[in-house]
Image 1 (cartoon, rainbow, N blue to C red):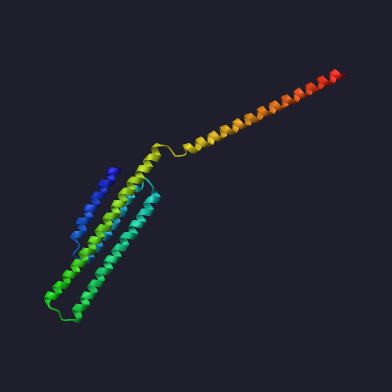
Image 2: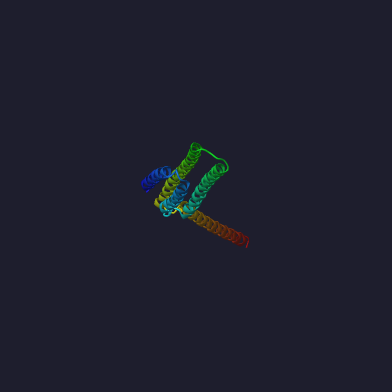
Length: 197
């Protein structure tokens, strides 16, 4: 199971890097690719972990989605702001074609940097997910093979019951000894009385 997780993670990371870097020249394409990657990562998480721990799946999936969405929002805002500023400069000032080419180069560089940031974040998230998944599956397998984990508790409870039974037997023995002592005293009293008579 862990080997399958590692293979899936490696494939996803390779696809992410290739697709995002190839599409980094256009902001709209980058946004679409990132949204697709979010869906892919969440699906991989759910498929891998659904048999191990549903709570962990939901918690980690929510965290991953929040982190990646925040990164995407930041990237989109940066790209949009840069494009708005460039358009404002182009409309308010008469600029040569060479200057506009330089501005477009800046936009492409910013978009590529944003895409690289997204790739790094996705890779880190996927690696962390792989380690978490392996740990959860290992813990799940250990608990499955070793029983339900309550054997020690049951043993302690049974031992306590046995100790209580032993205490009850000791109390019964003490009561029998007291009765015998009373009988001995009574016989002794009778013997003493008969000897006086």
